[in-house]
View (tube, rainbow, N blue to C red):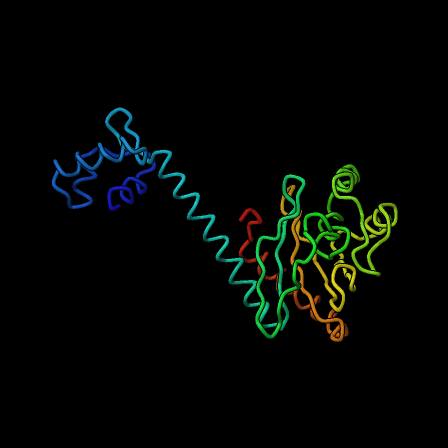
Length: 237
């Protein structure tokens, strides 16, 4: 591990003798370990110099991915406690809705996924928010694969009505849904667009607390805005 760290400190490569000296290893030991690391793909050797190999780069990428995910998990838990609501994080990737993370508590449980979220984007705030960020062709493609279906008495009734609603949604405007996916529940989702990928943060409340929804949504927007500005959350977790 010390050898790997030492090689990483030399982006232009370093010879075995220098690496042995800097890691306080006997030269024969360093040579043996370096050969093993090259054989396993963690290092590569070029003209007597050692560089990080593909396997080490994959480790680095995975570590960075885990760090980004940990950052978002921690942020959702913080907002959950600050606002007192379940918080959801979802993206639209490869034509599908993916709920990446949910943070709730026994006192403020998340909405039960009783109908597949991927197939019911038209009914919940998360799906409507993600679809609102797509162009018209992508929206219609999604609805061809997952047509509108009424799952509660409040669900939008047909594709045309849904598309009109999505067209009227302003770019950074929160999407609010009241009992369209689950009876007794109201939800709001705020859009997050980074590059070409659509993402959203959302919250839910029991319908008898619907009067809290607007204020809680504004608080979430404020919190997300601060974190995005300071940490530049990656949406690829």
